[in-house]
Image 1: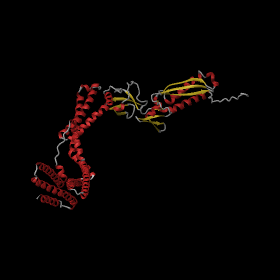
Image 2: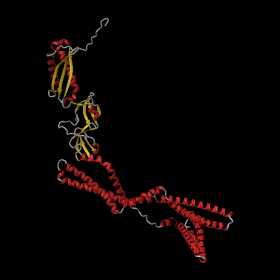
Image 3: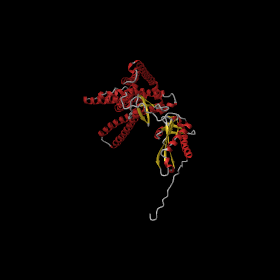
Length: 547
């Protein structure tokens, strides 16, 4: 009757697999695996019946006990083979239905419970590959056992063919039955593993489908939670900062010039806004029951706190700077990239200004001010040598009007319309002379030694008077501040005079004509008074013989 039931099960499995040609190889494989289990199962059932029959005929109690033990072992084998049969029929679904007892955790493993949601997601994502790998390893083990069983049975058969002793033959028969049972066990296990591996192979999808499916499931299940957490964090941060802005408007602490108390409150308010945003994220994950995202958030916070042990000291110096207690302070002057700047406001971003530069405002992160030192500026200290539309004379001889001066470049408009551009630092290296607030033109002039008698008193007076009249007439009395001609020295071939003329900045654009007018006036005075203008003389001395 049992064999009929087993055969009926075989027929049922076969008929259930005839729904399409796509599953034909799988069905054939399952039937083949079932047949490898049915024969050993039939033999095991027959062995149990035979042992029970012997038990009824046993004469001694010792013989009965041995038979009972044999019956128990045979029944366990029958149950094992039936389990193999049911596993093959049920496939991977039946294997997954089995309930395993939860593993007890030690006290040292309790910390791992915090990471359990994250590890669970990783286990789920890698469950199929790990299960496949485990099944393949088990399959290799059972195949090796099967080969060993076949080798042992073949050896027993060789020995049996040569043995003649009845006792030896009886023991060999018992040993062969043992190894035959083990071979059947191995064959059954191999069949079960083959079916499960085949079914898992059918469930396996391409890599891109697996990745896309995982991402899609993540956003379907946790995308809403992430969105709510972001909204809550942003809302909490904005609400906290706006409340603090209102408090700043009505608080007497924040009226007038910023103080240490107001700066401390600003930092605490910013820290409070960040804390509210973090708590909002954690509360959203907790309320939604999303333990995975909550675990990840906690891990990130713990990691940030741990990293803060080494990252905090530099930030303490920045906090001192923000509190206006550092080496750089508001209202003072510092040098950045070769240019002077006024520290207007210190915060997470510091505002620097230079009133004499076009676009002279910088916004720098507080970390860029580390290592700098500021000082109190003098009331009359210039922030830049020039202002736009002022005339300058540079160390390289360039003369022109500043049309653009920014933190990066200074552009000079030269006489004739050409423009010359300097990097601002290079411009300062040329030690620019600003002519728009007044300037001096100096020149040198000489007359011949034949006029030595009048050279010290009469000549300087005449030259000063004629030059003054000429400059007044050409450039205006208001533009000429002073004119002075003085005897300088007795040169090698002439009596030399220094000509000094000071002008107002309004005629700075006429520096070239002024220089030429001075020389013209000197020549005209010499012509009118008959003074000879010497030329450079070279005396050649001929050495005496023998020198």
